[in-house]
Picture 1 (spheres, rainbow, N blue to C red):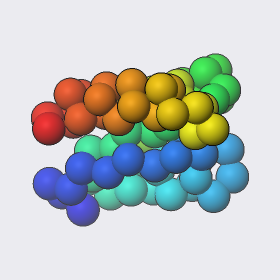
Picture 2: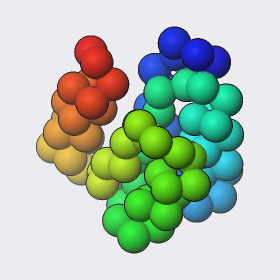
Picture 3: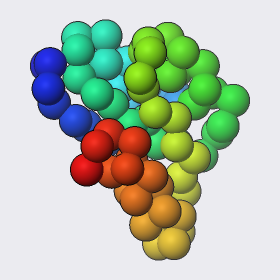
Length: 77
């Protein structure tokens, strides 16, 4: 997974969290997106250094746009 840059939505709990954390622990650069900030921060901490935690509500177009801009900037494009 080294060299991969990924965005995972729904990453604060459940399958999204498992995928995001697992991918990061396997060497991918990962931006974790979800609504619940404290759970998202816990997931990013578990995933390891360099993992981004970005608050995002996928039902809000503006929130998605900001989150993707932040992810692109944080992951290097």
